[in-house]
Amino acid sequence: MSGPLTGTTVVELAGIGPGPFAAMLLADLGAEVVRVERPSRGGVPSASPADALNRGKRSVVLDLKDPAAVEAVLALCADADVLIEGNRPGVTERLGLGPEDVWARNPRLVYGRMTGWGQDGPLASRAGHDIGYIAVTGALHAIGEHDGPPQVPLNLLGDFGGGSTYLVVGVLAALLEARGTGHGQVVDAAIVDGTSHLLAAIHTLLGSGRWRDERGVNLLDGSTPYYAVYATSDGGHMAVGAIEAKFYAQFVELLGADADPALQNDRSTWPETRERVSAAFATRTRAEWTAVFSDTDACVAPVLSLTEAASHPHVAARGSIVERDGLLRPGPAPRFPSHPGDADRPAYAPGADTRALLTAAGVDAEALLSAGAAVQG
Image (cartoon, rainbow, N blue to C red; front, side, top):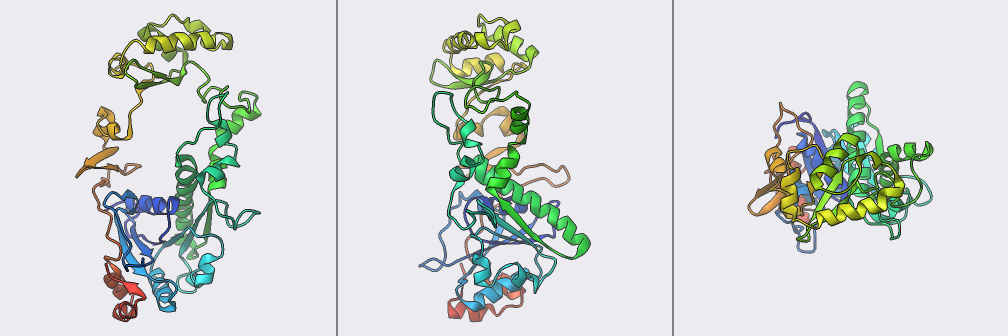
């Protein structure tokens, strides 16, 4: 795999969610990622061929309760550029794998820390998950209908948007600095910080009086008839995002709804307009409406399921989602014309590279394997 990060080595201490996704993204960009996993009761952890988060990574299985295994991780870090971990604050320090431990071997290493609450603050040591992190930022409160409860946006907004994305941005920035100074640093990526940062535009609207701190009454939260989702006659749905006046005019014309484009932003007309738009969409199937709007700028798109999405003409043409051996795989993003991405790279079997990578790092792999401190897959 080639990419802008070819020649960069990342050591990932295995975790769940945003940390592995960040490491996958770095692997997609060309980095060599070594995932350090802990043994299961049966020795080698289980793995699924559908696990896209581990694609393109190499795997070492080490029992970090054994000092010899910790020493092996430090040896792997000696020539690495980045370490990623997603434990609660203080855990890696107690293992002997904290920033100071690693920097004693490799002062230029960038130490990426992925948590929900961050490395300090009143909740730093508490357990949590995506839904709680986005709840305290105000983001969850803003999503949903006005007369209903907040709606959960999967774990895309917190874990992967406010978490993984900001960890990768921080790691790349720190890498640039480390290559100039020879000194790495900690990247403290917290989901509460990243999600709050993602709300910058909404806070701008709120501060200027163009956003009400209520759910379902604003431009982008489904309250308007021209930025919403509507049911079709066959139980499908169409997504409408006709914000600009010229797009809205085209939308109502093609829909055949009795709506005056000049009254688009007249709030008093919205309830009646929504009813008319809803009634119009209910007269045809999703496929029929897709055909009506497909070659227009009305900003209308069919709402596809996860399994349908790969067959969408644009998604398929871009390779945004591909199907291989009956499994859906996301294509790499962003794109670099000089480094074609590869969605087909497999998820390495846990422990498949234990012996080879430890030996390459100067570790007596056979001694660790014999002692049970390491496992070969």
